[in-house]
Length: 465
Image (cartoon, rainbow, N blue to C red; front, side, top):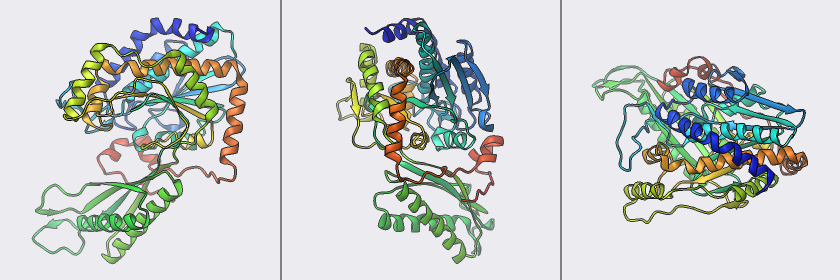
């Protein structure tokens, strides 16, 4: 066992129970993006209790925070924390679906990420102090990841200035260190204004029909022009009963693709189609942009540093009872399939991932390393079953492994700052010739001052794009 790992494990043992308690506390009190007041406060207190200097509301975002602990002058390693939940996906932590009376559920496992990544920072500082290393560990609490907004807003506010490299983690279907791309995502909302009235009359301005026409045209046009771009939409404020024509209907659209240029071009086509539909129907339409983010830019220096750390820490230490629960849950989700759970440790330096992340855009500006821990392949992400497993103790082994891996990786970077210099040089090589304007972001006033209007679909904010 290396000296660095010895110190991380020494400090992990007395911290383990507090981390697991935070997993449960976050899971039992899920909050939607940009409204994570209590979830953010719990993590801030956890870090304060271990000596970090915490600043709340950074970047003008009430639920964002920054926690710093400087040892001596040296490199700044930032670790990201996420803590928002997904609307409509609340469930009990059981192997069959049992709904609960909550507005959201941790169907992406952010109840793990916030505590595990915060714990990684605490462990890294304690171990680095024992080893008399220099540098600073910084935790950046990032709200609203699920709408790919929080880190983009904080980037615009300059929160990441002075950071030398970034580390983070997430649940997935494989356990390993990543240095490969994920999907770029662009999203926003289109608001059609109509005329409310009795559905028995043929009203000249029908917001619902206009929104449906946009969806029909967009699905056809994008399938032909951008066959590799995924598009997803949801109708909001589309009426409460068929006897009343709604006066307003909203379409929240997202595009996603490995190519950022394709995702943005496809989204631009939706904007053009919305304007065309509005003009043809002589109907007002308003575009409310939310955010965009590139997918990950791999960094092999950080990726291999974290992989070496993960191999030393070892894979998640699941117990027999954990595996039994996961088998039962997997059988509920896929009755005819045998549970598949990755129990190894891997390095992912090729291929691509299916998801989008708002820290993807950060990785094009600051070297970023990420580790994942595995869930069973039969448990769908953004699904009640992921919420269920995230709330069960069977899920704790993965993020506990990630906390130790990130801590060990951070200590290794402080001990060998030339690795950070190499990671920065790799970033320069990979981005050579690529224009990198700041990613677009909207809803800044709304999500900073009145996020409840975003979620009840009454927000009104147009951002020039």
